[in-house]
Amino acid sequence: MPVVVLCIALLCAGRANADGPGGGAPSGSPSLSLPQIHGRIYIDGQAYDHTRTTIASGLSVNNARLSLSGALPRDWRYLLEYDFAHRRIKYSWMRYEGFAPVRITVGQFKEPFSLEELTSTRFITFIERGLPNALAAGYRIGVGAERRAGSWTADLGIFSTPTSGYTVKTTGSGSWAVTGRFTWSPVSRKGALLHVGVDGSYRLAGNEHTFHVQQGPEAGRTEAYYLDTGSLTGVDHFATIGAEGAATVGAWSVQAEYVQTNVARRRGDPSLTFHGAYGFASWFPTGESRHYQGGRFSRVHPLRKAGALQLAARYSFLDLNSGPVAGGRERDITLGANWYFSPYTRLMFNYIKVHARLAGRMETPNIFLARLQSDF
Image 1: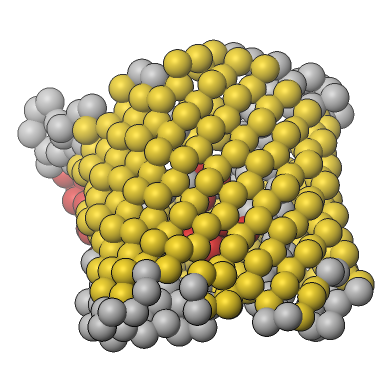
Image 2: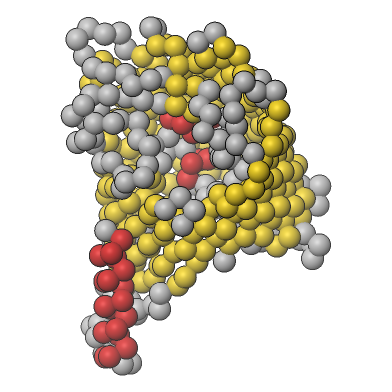
């Protein structure tokens, strides 16, 4: 898919240059744009104490991406993005916009589920997303339709498994899902926002009929999974639902989500339910406000040349205990501070207090995170 997108983009660019002004596309069709290159880099530091399970510490490049995007004749667009830090394709899609205001996207992109998942890591308030993010599918290959109409958005898609390099909840091949999201923002203006949304996903378990969820503390560099259901067999299908809400009033903002996954099993095995939630509040002492557009949050613009300061606190939990499955339960409390040097560069600090219990073992580490991030 990424090779196809890139080849089409370069081929069309070459044709446009060869045809010259007025050549190529019929009169009235959209003009071809030159490919745009974007990128981001995140440099992370991490330290911890009071843990039985080893957590990585030190410095690392957590994210290093480059993307190529642009417009093609006859209402088509494309995006190809690669993460060099993790050696995997992130986005690889083509989009048709000829049915405006409905847009059709084909390729690899995120399933339309969860406000926090769909808000880019460039704009989320904390260094890592909350614990319930383990139940959100993330990047998948599929086809989706979306509509943005003033105060509401609607997204619906059919998805299969992602490209190689991703951990998926269903380990069997042949997995398919239908996922949708609806949001409404009755108040959405500068300095004031009210956002509510609902999410739903129904997925067949695939040929091997297995299901697996694991989650570590809200620290990206660790491979210590405090919560783990193990590989559950005999699964027929599972459904995930979510509810989301957010509000901003000037420099203050609150946001929360609840996610629940119900697993239906074969051969008379009991059904299982896993769930989690998070909630946080943030404040800009320097007077800025979180920006919102199209059902998700976007870039913060400092009001002063010296930059902007954001303070935040979050509580999150995830419960993977259900029936005979003892996947564990964890709750995290996170305190954060962000300094925005510009809309494109910020320095982030997080302190996380973890309380996790799995198979009778308690883990209560203190984790200290820092990130310097920039994008262009």
